[in-house]
Length: 179
Image (cartoon, rainbow, N blue to C red; front, top):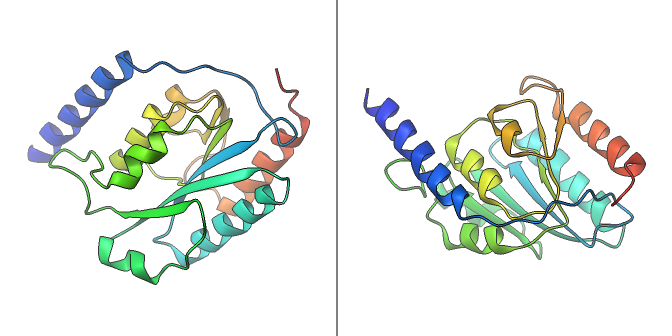
């Protein structure tokens, strides 16, 4: 029952914040984007590595990349290698109803990315919150609870391998015509 109250409070608060959110929607691809943001899992070592490789791939397209990786606990963050534009937060750095409290989240949400790619494959509320409240122009996610806040949804569920999901993202960002 307590978890249900926390979840409902989090969603109500997020929806209230969404009402005041102003964002410009524009379809972008690798050729038109100058900045790309990523949400990724740093808990699972394999998913973390795949996300980092994809971030490096996008960066080679002369695109400035930024990312937020989430770890189980904030004390694990010190073990991740430093990369300019990539920050981490612990899933223990949230308020009582799940809203992220780490200051790097506020900075990330203010960035007007040309593309925001959700590589998290999770329905955890802190990730849901970040994705929903980002002012990115073109938001990409998989078929999850975050899809109602996305501009482009790949019909791949959370159980699909991240590698396949990344292949699909690469494919569509190479063929989509920017507007």
